Structure formats: C-alpha cells, structure tokens
Amino acid sequence: MKFLPLLLANLSRKKIRTALTVGSFAVALFIFGLLVAVRDAFNTGVDMAGVDRLVITNRTSIIQPLPIAYRDQLLKIPGVAAVTHANWFGGVYQDERNFFPQFAVDAETWPEMYREFLLTEEELKAFRSNRRAAVAGEGLAERFGWKVGDRIPIKGAIFPGDWQFDLVGIYRASRPRDDVTQFWFRYDYLKENGPEWMEGIIGWYVIQLGNADDALPVAEAIDQRFANSAWETRTQTEKALNASFVQQMGNIELLILVIGSVVVFTLLLVTGNTMAAAVRERVSEHAVLKALGYSDRAVLWLVLAEVGLIAAVGGAIGLSAAKLFSLEDPTGGFFPSFFISPEALGVGFGVAVGVGLLAGVIPALQAMRLSVVDAMRRA
Image (cartoon, rainbow, N blue to C red; front, side, top):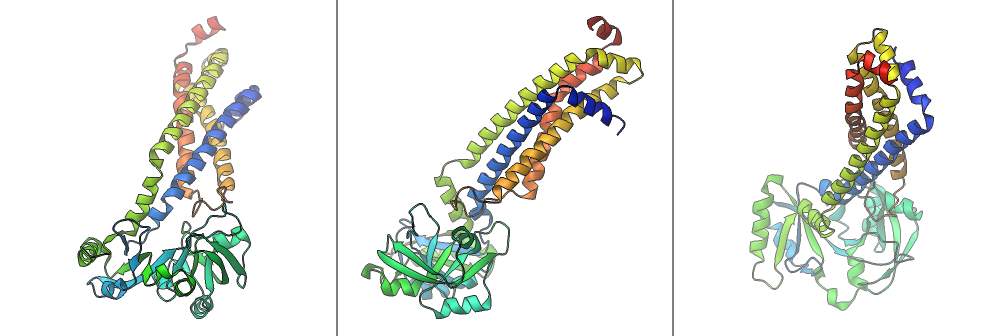
C-alpha cells in the first residue's frame, strides 16, 4: 500500500494517455465478453442436452417424417424407459422477423421428458385438458409481453391457416442456460386441423434411457429394428444432434478464437508501446528512486503494478459493460440464451491482467536495469 500514492501520481500525470489505455482494455474486454456470450449461445443446446436422451429422426433428413406407429415399437426395445414425439411448426407471429421455435408435442409425455423445464401442476393440468392450449418459455413470454390467459395467433407456413392458441402456462428454467424461448402446443390439435398428408406421421421421436451408459447399444438396436423399412431411422444422442446444427453454421469456435487473438495481440502492442513511452519519460525519476534506496526489484514491481492496475481497471469496466449488455438479449431471441457466466468473467479479468503484465515486462526490465549514473547523464 505504501506505493499506492506513487502509482496514482504516475497514472494521473498523463491523464489522457492513461484514460486511453484504460479505454483500450475496456473495449477489448467488452468484445471478449460478447464473443464468449456468442460462443456459449451457439453451444447452449449442446451443453444443456440431456445425457439420457436420444433423438430419432428420419434417416434421409430431419425434415422427413416418421410414422406414429413406431411409438409402441420403440417402447418394446430394451433400455428405452419413455418415448415422446414432436413436430416442427414453423409459423409466423405478427412478423416474419419474430422467429422462435414452435413444437407440436404430445401433451402427456413431453413435459415428463423435459423435466428441466418447470411448470406448475395447474399449468400442466390446463395444458392437458385444453385442445388449443399452448405453453411458452419465460424468455419468450417476456419478449412479447405474453401472460397466462392470452390468445396467441400464429399464421401457419408449413401447415397453412390462421392458428389460435390459448396460453395456459409459462415454463421456467431450472438452470441458468436452459432454453426458455420455446413454444409448445398440442400435437392432437395440429393433427385434427392440419392437412391430410400429415395423418399418422410425426416429425421426430425423443426417448429416455433407463441407463445413460446404454446410449450406443440402444441407438444401434433402434436403427436395426427399422432398417430396410420405408421409414429408416437415424438415432443419436441429443448432444450429437444439437452439435450437428452448430456445425452447419460453420466453425464458430475457430472464428471466435481468431477474432479474440487479434484483439488480444493488438491490445498487447498498444499497452507495450504505452508503457515503454512512460518508462522513457521517467528515466530521471527512476534514477532518483534508486538513489534514495529503492532496489532494482522495487522499481521493476512499481512499473508492473502500474500497468497491472491499468489492466485491472480497464478489464473490470469492459467486462461489467458486457455483462450489462447481455442482460437483455441483443439478438431479439435468435439464441436460446445470451449469457456471460461468472467463470467467463473471471477468465476475462485474468486475461486482461495477464496481457497488461506481459506488455509491461520489457519496459519494467529496462527500468530495473537502469543505472543511476547513466540515467542522470541521459536526463
């Protein structure tokens, strides 16, 4: 603490330069925070996938259907504890830009399969008793200002027509990064009012395993059961399916890594140049400190403490701004979650301080090795 007044005096000498350096760290760490949030948003479905769930789709493509008759056969396969199914609806609410996932689900089995999505007993009962009932995630309801009891009109695209749904429940998340942007309604309502071609078919199945370790043998047994049929299947873990969707968007991890590396490298150059200039300007002052009895190591740590303080303050400002920015999803619901975890904030702060100290090493060594005689001559 005895060096703090000296540190503050050094930092306040060139206020504009100090402010700009702190601002550089703040901007860089703000970008870092957003990159982490985007990466985690793309990986949310992968990270939050149930380890004991398998998804069964048509072998040709996920957009091709499967027969509803498979349900009873799936329940007879050893290792399968429960089965549910869903259809993608793909309707439009008010405007085509208002995208959110809409699923026609089995009201009896779907909520039981996804227990991480929390509904009250009253909401669950209402969903199962009303043909036009629908349930929305709390994030989706907040986005559009929905409340229980509202009538939700959606214009069908895959299933033409003007569909009306009664919002009877709003599910909550049991974990911070669970998807709260989904909209569920009853499959039997879709079947009764949809086109004739969907009679007896569904989009995909989700099964729950009795033992998560049986995922591979159960998946193979399912696909073998329906091999060479008119509706061959492809069974994979929920995590693998979600990962395949992320891969279709390109190598997001590599893109974020490249952008982050460029930001960090630029910050390193800017900070290193700033501290080198500061050390050159204070040659005589460092010489005076040494003449007064300060050791070479004390001068080294004084320079490193200065750049470390700049990095810490700038990093804290940037990360705080990124966290505040992420509290309201800036993507308008494109991602199921937009969240910066405490762990990511800790890593970002460590990166900021680490880059600052690394940038200050060479100037600090120069100050440490400075001789009093040479410094006085140069002054």
